[in-house]
Every structure is written in C-alpha cells, then in structure tokens.
Amino acid sequence: MPNEESPFVVIYDSMLALNLPVKTLLVLALIYGYTRNADGWYTYKSEIAERLRMQPSGVSRALRSLMNRGLVRGIRDIGGPRLETPAETDYSGPFIVVYDWMLDRRLAGRELLVYALIYGFNKSGKGCYGRREWIGKRLNISNPGKVIAILKRRRLVQETYKRDGSPLLAAMLK
Image (cartoon, rainbow, N blue to C red; front, side, top):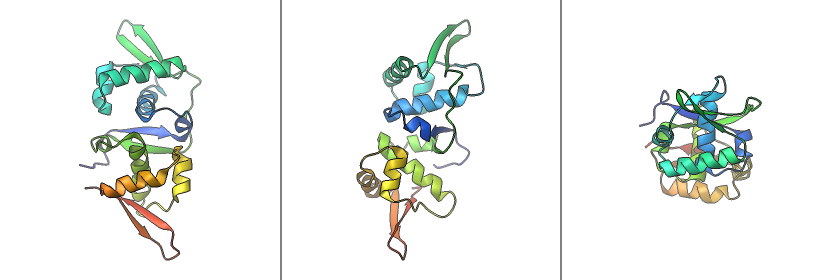
C-alpha cells in the first residue's frame, strides 16, 4: 500500500547520466543515501537484496560493476563489510524518489523510473505534463512511449489530455 512515510531511495539525474542498469542504479542510490554524510555503511549483500527486492546474486553483480567503475568502495572492517562512495562524489541537483512500495509492484527497470517520475509530479496535485520526449531525455530512455503504454495497460498510469491537446499523466495507486 502506498505510504508517504515508507522508506525510499533518491536517484539523482546525475546518476541517471551514468547509463547504469536500473538495478545497479538502485544499489548505487541506496549506498549513496547512507554514505553521503557518513564514513560508510556497514551492511551485507543480503540486507541490500531484501531492501531492493533483488536476488543476492544481482546485488553482487551490481556491486562488482560499481566497484569496477570506481563509484563504490568495499572495505573489510573490524565491524563487518563497509561500503562507501568516494569522498569527492556529489550527486546533487534534480532527482526522483523511488519509494519501497513501488518496488513491490514488480516493474521492470525503465517502468519503475517512469512510474516514480510521474508519481512525483502527482504529489503536487497537478499531474505530470511532461511530453514523452522530455520524460525520455530526463530518464535517459530511448522509447518512453512504449514504457508509458505498458504502465497504462497495467493500469498504473492514466493519460488524459488538456484542452491544448498536451498529455497529462497520472500515477494510479491501486
């Protein structure tokens, strides 16, 4: 059930520009959220997997990829495994919020990002007036229309039109 107070992960637009697979992007965003103002995050792959509704093997692949690119460091510490992002890392600026309840909807990667973006605009009560081209550019997705069609078929997004013919997208909270 949607809950504004549920845990969430913040994905900054500068993270989207890294062209990471969405599951890897979620792992990076989660680690960054815990480490941006701290010396690291003591955690286990199983905890990350449970939080992000992923298989532990998927978390391992994501961590390997992030470590190989220098986006995350893993340190064996006396308190257990510790993850951190490099000190000079600053993902600031525009962002989208992925609430944990969104992960329970079993959306594919791009579907999750588009849904989260549309939902974020719905919270303002105005809906998402972004054209498909803007959504594609913002999320680094080549065919946002196809993703929106999937979300509409699953009744997770509803599309109406303003008087000028521009689309208004609304996230459904079924």
